[in-house]
Amino acid sequence: MTADGLLRVVTRTYRPDVAGITAELHRHGWAEANAGNFSIRLADPPRFTGRIINLPGHFAGLARQVILMKRAGARMRDIARRPESGVCLLKIGPDGTKGQILPPDAIPTSELPSHLASHELLIRQRPEQNALLHTHPTELIALTDAVRSPARLLELLAGAHAESQTVMRRTGIVGRFNPGTTRLAQATARALLQHDVVIWPGHGVIAAGHDLRSALDLIEILNKLATIALLRLRI
Image (cartoon, rainbow, N blue to C red; front, side, top):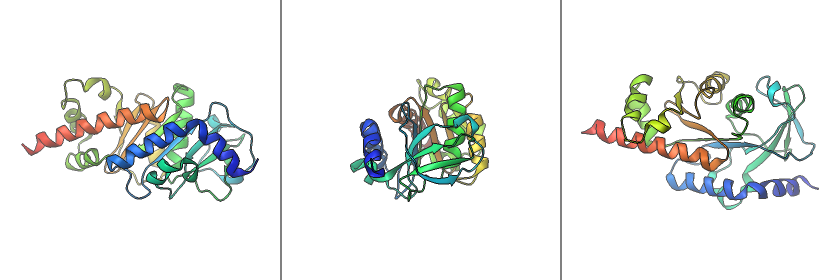
């Protein structure tokens, strides 16, 4: 089977989730241009040979795992219409330092370090959560810039709605790190030890779930809390 054929077969299984969620992100306005990314560990990984790449670290806990993820530069609005056009497959090598990418010309998401570090944590702690979603919720980002104290930020979110506690117990926050860096990846993985959704101040949020839809649920609720908190700050 050709690389394009294999990618179409694999993507078909996840098409409703991928197409639906990328369309929602575009509709919300949280996926400007090529912003945002996602990844899914495959339960029934296919066999393939792809271009060998060096991974941004040592991920022994992901050895031989296959991950479906967004390609760098792909637009969510385009993926919503034709999912296979903006995704790639990454097979982690046996020692966790190299991988094979398919299609061979694909470049994985710029947030690859965070996705790999987070999946390595999840496969050890909560293996049922095999999906990660990162996006740029407008009001949440605005609130992280208006309120620089992490403790105060979490307090405002927790007090925004009578039913906020369920989500806030699952919400963590990291420091301000440059996008795509190992420091951001390590901090995110540490936060995911106890949480399902992690705020990246001034940048966005990343959420884990058993699929992309459950991850988006957390992000939508969190951004609603941020919207309410911003409105209260203006009164």
